[in-house]
Amino acid sequence: MKKDDCIFCKIANGEIPSSTVYEDDDFRVILDIAPAAKGHALILPKEHFANIFELDGVVAGKLFTLATKVAPAIKEEMGCSGLNVVQNNGASAGQTVDHFHLHLIPRNEGDDVSVKWVPKESDPEENAKLAEKIAGRM
Ligand code: 5GP
Ligand code: ZN
Image (cartoon, rainbow, N blue to C red):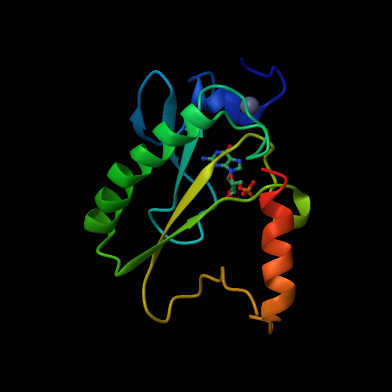
């Protein structure tokens, strides 16, 4: 289902023009209007899901299959040596458009793109307990 006030619903369904890399019944792949690097693409489902917490599993499977086709095409065209797959959920995680989308960001040594966190220490016992607790909620 589409959401009336959602800009990515409008873009994905062709109501607002975009630089489209690919389109099928379920998805549109576009170039980001304010890219982290040249060739930065977004995979948008045509159906509205706000985030990963709402995303349908079958759509997710198709979406990642599509990502395996788009990523090498970007890599080849941009001649980049790496590529980040980024996906933000919630404002605290950096999500600014509440319609699920997958970022594909070309990367090169020494570029100015930043998607890396500061690694913390972890306690193996605490991690084992935490893993069990999370597993219990799936
Ligand atoms: P988020 O921060 O939600 O993970 O990513 C939203 C992305 O959508 C940003 O990288 C932003 O530049 C891009 N974006 C926002 N509005 C538009 C638009 O109208 N057209 C395109 N092509 N990209 C957009
Ligand atoms: Zn939407």
